[in-house]
Amino acid sequence: MSSPTPGSAAQRIFIDKQSPEAYHALVQTSDTARAVAADAGLDRTLVELVNLRVSQLNGCAYCLDVHTRAALRAGDTTRRLGVLAAWRETELFTPEERAALALAESTTFPADAAAQESAWAAARDTLTDDQISAVIWVAITINAFNRVSIMSRHPVRADR
Image 1 (tube, helix red, strand yellow):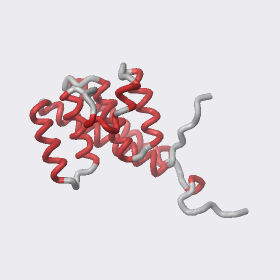
Image 2 (cartoon, helix red, strand yellow):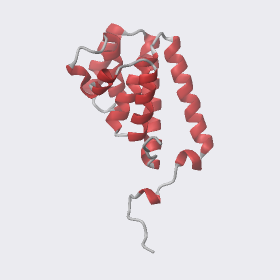
Image 3 (cartoon, one colour):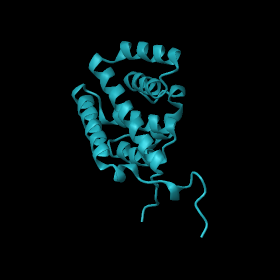
Image 4 (spheres, one colour):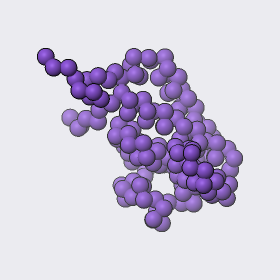
């Protein structure tokens, strides 16, 4: 019997299953972030756009699958979701969504100081303090879920 190659899925564990207490705490944090977003007046489609854009940046297939379906259920369109990776090049997103997407990207890549300053400026022009905080919390939690799924190699399976 041969041993698994380094980095293969056979060597991975589902860390959400291995340490359920930590995973449940993350789920609670995410639930709270979504509630904060709703309380701040952010539409569920905007929250799902943030989840999708961060998942695109991180290359998390599992979260892209989950949040694409969630965005469609929330009423977003396949057209908008199809061009999300190039959101700056379209007129399909509202000023609030554009500000939230820029802020989510700067949360995902905080070392880019220039992008972060630009994102904060756009957010300040468009979003309330509560909305800014909510967007950042949504981005923080989806970044964490991306890492759980990427490190666990959660599969995306075809529908049966």
